[in-house]
Picture 1 (cartoon, rainbow, N blue to C red):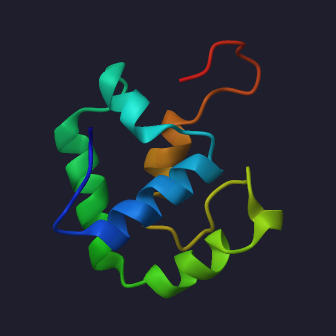
Picture 2 (cartoon, rainbow, N blue to C red; picture 1 turned 90 degrees about the horizontal axis):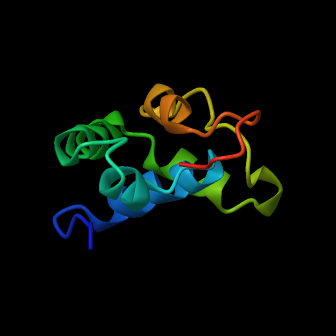
Amino acid sequence: MIGYVEAPITWALVRGMARRAGVDVPAAVFEGWLSRAELARMVTRCQSAGCAKGCMDVLAKPECAKTAPPPFCAIKSDLEALAPDPDESVSR
């Protein structure tokens, strides 16, 4: 199991924004698309960005499901790089 007990709220935000972008973070690590060190850096960037309230607000809106992370998301580019290509039939 992958998790960050020292930053549970941030870990939840990372997973939530990832799901929103179509990324299963634990699966990305297990399948080798993302290293644990890269994931740790993503969690750290997210935690230090200072936008947790905005992320929580976005994730609380069901109409925002399955859309790209908002522009202020500190890990937006990472998640977009991991997101499955809509033209591919194989998901990551």
